[in-house]
Length: 128
Image (cartoon, rainbow, N blue to C red; front, side, top):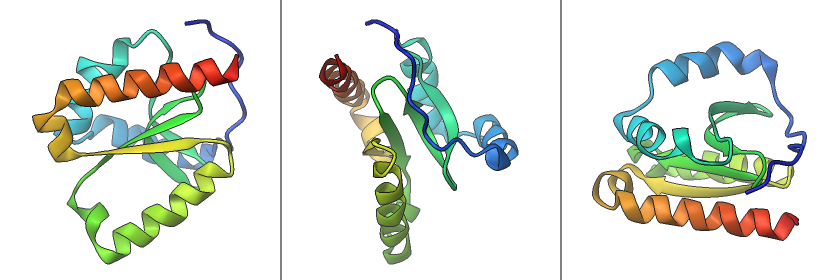
């Protein structure tokens, strides 16, 4: 996979300290996905990246992809509404958001990794 210059994504330096704290305190599922797959992926992936007024779990600028790992709070009425607004803001930057549950990470880890790999490869092929 070739590296090209990433697109501007509304990086918000005001969230830098919060993002740093989240990197140090990842959930077990985020930690598993990061250390056992994304960290050594052949295309650069950032963890806990500030974009606009949000901090996304994982971000691949070359594929214009946000990867979210969702816990139970994302399935409350408030969580669903918040995520919907957040996803729409991220889409305005030309980003696609894909979501996996904590349960997906725990029980179907290889399938999650395969889905992420396929999505990154597809998105990058569309940019060529």
